[in-house]
Length: 308
Image 1 (cartoon, rainbow, N blue to C red):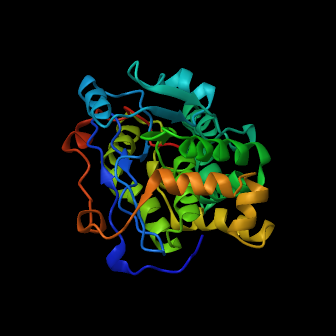
Image 2: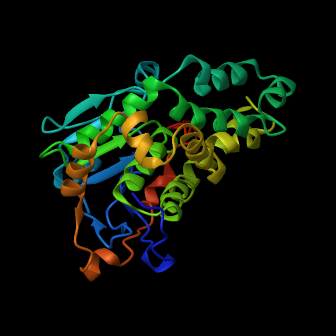
Image 3: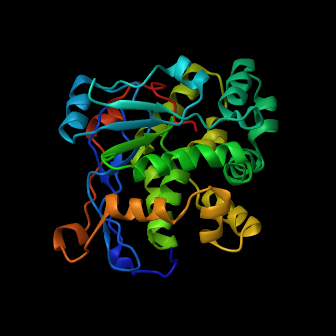
């Protein structure tokens, strides 16, 4: 579990899965560890919610041999947005990461319903929206139940025959972003690459975020929809806040892995066996990035919230 940089030339952009109904779905394959091993393509996938998948999207996932889907959304999120669309060959694991104190979706819903510009600015303006997000990321680390849910995803990835496995939340940004950061760090991917993967959400979700903001402007719930940008975007300092909490509570990531997440060397060894392979293949070492599907920009405004 090393933070030693591997060099910018080794940073492959995560591959889009090309899903119309989940524009932030992508493959973590191709990232290189400090030891020169490479995360295999098609085994660990991250995404936004699968509730809006088309039949063609399901066909794409089936073609990948997807076996397990982990849904990190709360029960309320699932009820409001809809359950994941899966095939009979996919096993769904619902592992909600949720706390009343950080129910940002509910807070925003009530604020928008009031249509009060002053109240919206009082809640979100002058850095307060960003502070809400930073608090959420710190909670990912300080809350024992949240840590256990993230650890359960890692245990699933370590099980024999678990892959391909896809994990997701609503936007594929926060809970999904921290899960991916934990996985990549544990495997030995350097910290800058972890941030590179995290920030790809902004590229993949830009069209959806822009459509939602324009919809809010046209429909009138907000006179300043840009106040929501800190909630909709992945920001480097959010993820930094989570890693800061790890450093504040444990001597190093190895100690956090064992004590904070309750995971042992056997889980790590199984993860490495399941997900890593020799890095001497040029096709894996090369960038595997792809643009998000063009259809992403064609989604109707407000369809699929880019919230946490």
